[in-house]
Image (cartoon, rainbow, N blue to C red):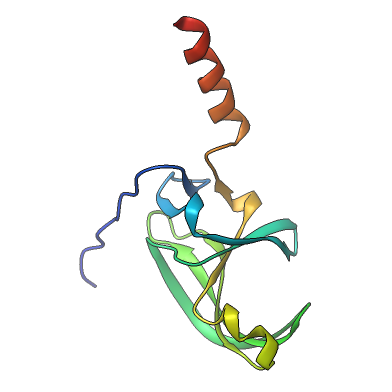
Length: 124
């Protein structure tokens, strides 16, 4: 296996909760109205620093889809899934897009970031 290169993103980013590897940018959010087994998830146009698992058919809330789990290349944690094929014509926009589960990632507006921002503001 070759060396893994990590892409560093700039701006408002979402990262792996376990190792802080950058995964995507806020501007790549397509939808915030997705659900996963354990709560809320976001659909992203582009995600980096991931590896994919095997393709499998899953019956999701919007019908049958061929998906692959996606894993952080930094620590190997499962962070969501990627749509390979949507079997319903109304769901084709999801193909090639990724869903990240919010409980597995940290984002630009998480409580720790807000606390740091507030402390920085008070120190000025």
